[in-house]
Length: 301
Image 1 (tube, helix red, strand yellow):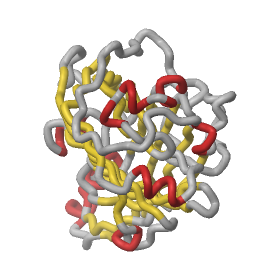
Image 2 (cartoon, one colour):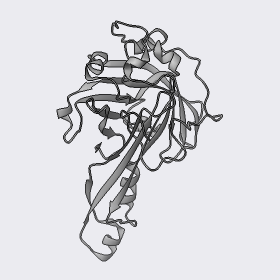
Image 3 (spheres, one colour):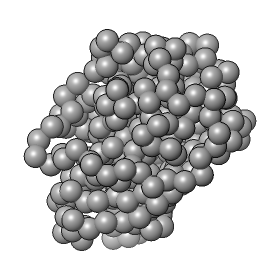
Image 4 (cartoon, helix red, strand yellow):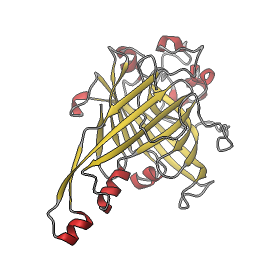
């Protein structure tokens, strides 16, 4: 994943995904719906020359961000099955992980994976923790032409051009493949080429994307039926970098997802919250805080 310095999130567990090789198979169907999002802050512009955001509009599929981040270690005290049998004391297990992120104007890929030391493979708790610490997604983004006039086509996006990535389709590649089609673009991932003032201007107040319908196009999970629809809300805004201990960067963009509550959201493959910390001097992603499963907030930097 290599961009101009400005996007991150992919971990070594994603099969055949990436902005340039985005799956264009039969799973994906262009959405013909119009968005019903509300909460539309006033915007000074409804269309924009995307080159002012640092984009290479002549090569929209070229990487604009490519980043590999390391997870802050997570320590847990685990006894395990063998310990129970032999009467051994609990063992402290350290979980380490990596996140890889790649993004362009057409696609955004994120994947992460973890290892355990010591590797107590016979421990159900270790196995479950390793699974819960993983994440993986492949997002198809709004086409460049629509993105340049996004405020006219999708009112909830009025004034948002340079930072948030507008995803129209989403593929979860964690354990079971789930393909979602959204009734309106949702923010997933960031581009980091804009200057600090532009980022602050676009996200000066919290933005809400409401009445978003996620339709399951296909699913390998028998509990998630193809054709089912779930309504949700996404919010985005700035949070203090100082509120995230250990974060690297000078501006933090928070995006939260709620599709029927945390459990339902995670089951669809979406995180419940992601905070993208951008280094605006170097035009790159400094760190990412991800909250999804049962292990709380994880920091990658």
